[in-house]
Image (cartoon, rainbow, N blue to C red; front, side):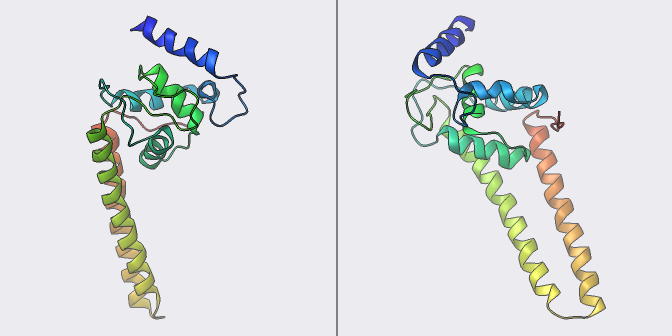
Length: 173
């Protein structure tokens, strides 16, 4: 397995001219803080490697899923580097957004979780808008209570999701 990963990196070195200023350069992974490197690779390892390349989801989509779940930003290149370290194969090294041999069904599950979270956020915004129209104390109190309630539901769902996938909170540094 280690030789396979080394071969992957050697292929990258031949195909790409590393310029760590490029947000699509997989070597940018090493610019991340160590704690975020560990969390990102752990995140990638959650997914099963399959025989065939998944042409439905690219590195760009996957890095957004990671960022949406963890609330930590990584660029496309940093995500590509993490996927290589996790042992995934790349379909076309010369393409901007890489495709990997990653399970489509697992990505769909993550997208469904994010969709549910988004509906909670949208409902919160709708209620805030509705409740903030009138200028009376009772409505403002309802608004504050409802905002706290929905925020705690969202926070609990986020924490449950992190626990489900064995990812700890990422520190900044």
